[in-house]
Each structure stands twice: as structure tokens, then as C-alpha cells.
Image (cartoon, rainbow, N blue to C red):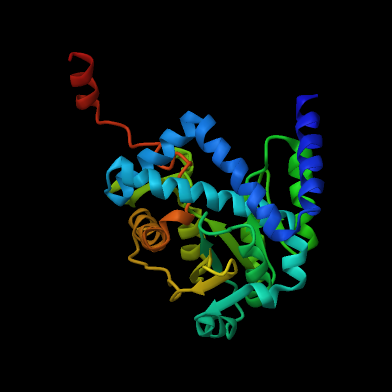
Length: 302
């Protein structure tokens, strides 16, 4: 019952923002997220600690970045409401850089994996990807509330985003690759240990999904780093970086780690460049490597 009530509230809020225009919706979104900043102490603390640690700055400086970061989330809310408008008028909202990397990859019959993260407006980024890179399948985690999940999914699919979700995602990804299709993967969230390898992220081990490296190695396909950030004029820059071709030494475990590290380093560099536009509220370093048995015993005995 509560799930449906939450959905109705979201739908009402969505309709309300539709009356305000894009800039008005952004402003309301910013006010709401600042309210969230002050009321949700747990998430605020996670964001402040993450930014202070990763950027190696005092908490007071991190607070300034995190407040601008919350304003950024608010703009995302307003922009998602006007998703269809942005999609119809995409040429007025996007600027692209380094499309020559894309042109080279398109000469091959093989597909490739678009690697990105929760930087800028990662939802709006899908419009830029669809329009310039071509239709691809995005790997997404379902929202726990099925009503809201269906609502968001319907909006995504209306603009041509193909979603891979739910169970058997890996098998579906492999099927798409065999067909020569492209995949879109956001690789900057904490991964369950059974699906991950640990790589360095801002100087600390981060549990990172290994599936991108495994697919790249298995099918010998490149990974195309890309991101979408908000420009000062409230429009978006989609920038592509040099493709990462699979590094192969014959040792699969080491190759997965080495390739995953390259992907993660790319994301780290983007975040350093646009710190106000990354998802600091996420507990990225939640999963940590298990301590060796002797260290565990030492801790138990004080």
C-alpha cells in the first residue's frame, strides 16, 4: 500500500513540475534537495566524508562542494521531468566532443561497451548517447518500488532506451554483444563482493563490478569511456575518451583487475574535474577486502 501511495505522490509532483517550465522545475528541485541536505543527516555525513577523503580537503571545504552537489541533484529532478522536451530538441541541449573515437569504432561489425558513471545528469546522458552513439542497451538496477520502477522505465523506453534489468543480466548482455549491439554500463557504485574485484579508487580499495572487463576480454571488444556533464549555460557536454582495448596477458584474474583499474581511473579523473557533479551520497567504499585471518585474531585479542 505504501509503495502505491509513494508512487501517487511522485506522479502528482511530476505533474506539478510540468506546469513550471524547465527552469522553474530546476529551481523547485534545488530547494527540495537543499531541504534534503539539512534533514537527512546520514546521507549528508556520507557525502561530506566521501568528498573530504577523496579530494583530500578539510570538511569545511567539502561542505561547500557537497552543497553545490545537492543543487546539482535538484536540477536533475527538474530535467528528468522535461525528458521528452529535451529529447525532441536535443540539438539545443547537447554539445559533443571527440566523436572521431566513435567513428573509428563504428567501422567494425562488433559492438562495444560505453563506460560511464553517476556524473553530471546520467539520466539525460542517455539522450545524447542514443542520438549520437546509437541505440544501446543500458544495464540498470530495478527500483524497489515496482510502481515507481514501471513509471521510470516507461519514460526511459519512450525515448529509445533499451533496458537490461532483473535476473540473468549477464546472459542478456552476452546475447546483445553477439548480435553486435552496444551496452551502456555505469561502473562507479559499490558492488557485492561475489560480483567484484577490488581496485584503487581515490587511494582506497573499492569493490567494483568485474563484468565489464570480463565481457571485453571474452568477446575482444573495446570499452568507450564517456560522460555527460552540465555546462555553465545549463546545457550538457557529452565527451568521449580514447577507447580502452582489452589488456590480455593470459592470466584472466590479473587481466580483469588490470582492465577494471583502467576504467576506474578514468572515472576518478572525471570526478576530480567535476566534483560538484558526482554522486557523493553513495557509500562507494562500503564493501572492503576481508582482513587476513591473523589480523582478525589480533583484533579479537585487543
